[in-house]
Image 1 (cartoon, helix red, strand yellow):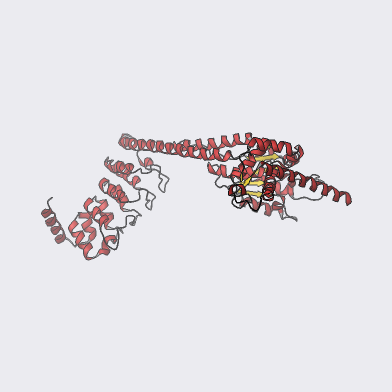
Image 2 (cartoon, rainbow, N blue to C red):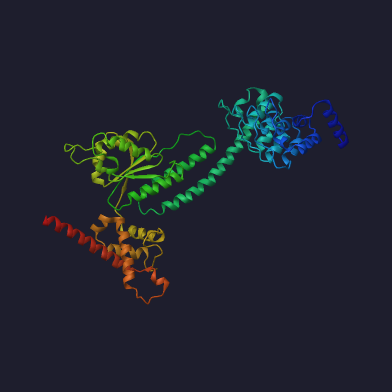
Length: 499
C-alpha cells in the first residue's frame, strides 16, 4: 500500500468509529497513533477498560509490526512498558506468542522483552506459542522463541511444561520434534558449560588440597567426593535424574597438632566449593559448648548448637570428653549431648566430625550403638615426619596472614625443605615431635624471628637482611622451644612434688 493510500485508509477508519490509541494499534493506523501520542504522550502505556491492555499488547497480538516498532522507539518523557500485564497477567510478549505473531515476538525480544515471563496461570510465552501451533499447525512463533533459547522445561501452575501441552498423535509430531531437538541442543550446551566449570573447580580444589601436608587417605577421599560431585553436575546437565550426594559423618583420630581442626576448616570450604555442602560454615565445639550444668539444660543447649551448624560441618573437638571414663560415678550430661547429636545425624542437615586422640575416642565409639552406623569414615592423622613438618613450615612462610607476627618475613634460600627437615630431626626429640607435631612450627618461627632481631646490628640498613630468617635463626628457634618445653615440664613436676 502506497503512502497516500495508507493515509486515505487511516482517514476512512477514523471517520467510521471513534479514534482511540488501542483502535489504531489494532488496525495498524500508524499516522493516527502518532498523532494521538503527539497530542497526549501519556497514552503510550494507557490500558483499555475491559482487558487492561496497553497499545503494545494490542499491536503485538495483531502482529502490527509498524505499530510495535513505533511504540518501542517512541521518544518522550515516558517509555513504553515492555512487561506491562493485562487482566490475565500476560505481557505483550505473551500476546504475540499466543497469536503466532513471530515478527512482533522477534521485535519485542530484540528490545529486551522477558522470554520467561509468567502469566497468572504460570504459562510462559512458549506455552502459549505451543497452544497456537497446536490449533493452526503454524510453528513460526515457537521457532522464534526457541531461537532466543526459550526454556522448554518451564512449568505452569499445573506443573506442565510446553512439551506436556502437545497432544499425542500425528498432529503434534512436528511440534514435538522441534521441541525435542531444541531440548537436546540445550542439554549439550549445558553439558559443555558444566565441563568448563568442572575443570575450573578441580584446578581450584587441587590447589587447596596441595596446602594440606600428609593425610594421603583423606586427600584421596576428598578427591573422590569432589570428582563424583562434579560428574553429578554433568549428569544433571545432560538431563539424567540421579540421587543427591550426601557427605558421610566422620571421625578424625590423632595426636595433638596433627591438623585435625585445620583440616576440618579446609574441608568445609572444599566441600562447599564443589557443591556438596550448601555453606562453607564450620562450627567448632567442645564439651562446654554442649553440656549443661543441671538437669534439663543439656538438651536445649545442644539442639541450639546443632541448629546453628545446619548446612555446614559441626566439628566436635576432644569428643571423648562427652563420655566419662567411669560411668558409675557422678551424673554426667555428656552422654545426653551425644544422644542429641546422634538423633539429628540421619536428617542430612549437618555433617558431624568427631575429633580426638585415638585411645580415648574408643569410649565414644563404643558408648552408642548407632555410632558406627552413622559415622562411616574414620581418618587417622599420623604424627608428622620431620620432612612433613618442614613442608608445613614453608607453607606457613609462603601464606602468612597480615595479622601474623611473621607477615612480611621470608626464609633465606639456604632454608630448603631438606635442610629444615634435617634440623628438626636433629634438634627435636621424638617425644617432642609426637607431643606437638605441627604445633611446634609457630613457636619455632616466632623464636627464630626473635633471634633475627637479637643478632642484627642497629646499623643494618639492608632491607632484605631485616626480614630474612636464616638457618641459624631457625636452629636457635628450635633450641629455645626445646628448652622452654623442658623447663615447663620440670616446673610442673616440682609443683606436684612440693604439694
